[in-house]
Image 1 (cartoon, rainbow, N blue to C red):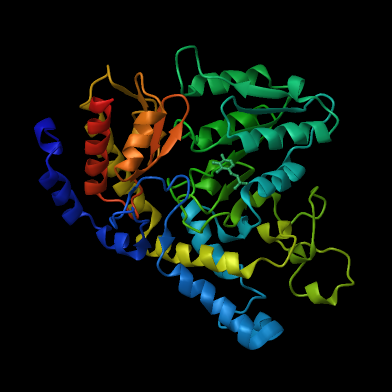
Image 2 (cartoon, rainbow, N blue to C red):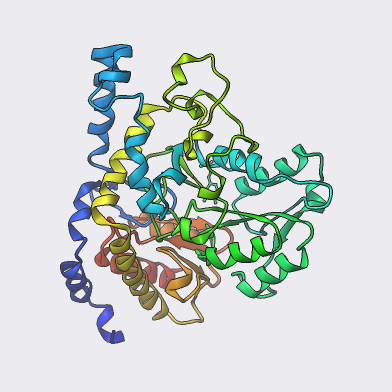
Length: 425
Ligand SMILES: *Cc1c(COP(=O)(O)O)cnc(C)c1O
């Protein structure tokens, strides 16, 4: 990339023309500004856009309910009884797991609790949970409350990994050091992947190996990883993972979450677990008299018959992911994010500082841009000019160029607006 070229609209247009995924943009609704123009939407890390097929998918279920009532459980176009099964394989492909290890259910924080019920089993000696100091607040609340629920004290038993003085990302040698320093007390390593603030993406396999080496369990919150980076959950060896489907996965506000449970924990009767009828062996579920007999898969963690309307939106989105393919998406994401990075760097280190790691192996589709001496006015100004991004106090703009629906021209147009707003401020 020659620097004098990347600022030319023709440069971005050429990349758009050559983009093998360019047709996917038209499959989404973009929010519109007051002037009727679409926004430059770079907020898919917070709430993904609505696929045009979602409405039809939800309407299908509404109509089947209207016309069939309870019979829809068996006779709807997509029968509701096994409905969640229709999603499992596509979901498993997105997160790199085998289908038996994956279940779409509940919401993210709820799933985190369900997983901790099973995999955070503290005793008097081994009772600590390790998280990131800037973990998403919900994850921290969940971990603290689990510690208290077992009669322990989060002030003693919650280890918060902090970046080094003057740094924003965690170094993997420091993660390792903390794990081994707490080798006899660590019960659970719980990390976000990818970090919601910095966009840093951890090597889950290495971290899982360290955690298991000291006898701890390990789980990942993949809220910002699912649909963003190929997670390879099975290969990572982690005990569990959870995620939401409304960020990169476009399942709509408050959409259903997902959970991964490592194969080695499946098909066990004695595992501590909160149980309900939808986790019971489906062959005998409706006899309703037998003792609980778990499904031999991650489905054993399901409690209720699932919300079909919400699930239909997840399914509509997964079909798009399946047709694009997570590896092709990743390839474009690397290129698109690097383009944004190259543009932002032309502003100079005195003006901006990108806090997301530079290596594509340590980040997904998000860049967190710290603008020197900026305040919220700068962010308001780019919003007014047609950009939807995300602001984190005191001075960070988070932007996510999403490979499914963002173009190289989006990235350039955003950059021009940012540059203009900085020079006016
Ligand atoms: C988005 C996000 C959440 C939100 O949790 P919900 O239960 O879906 O409201 C939690 N944790 C992380 C890391 C997130 O990125």
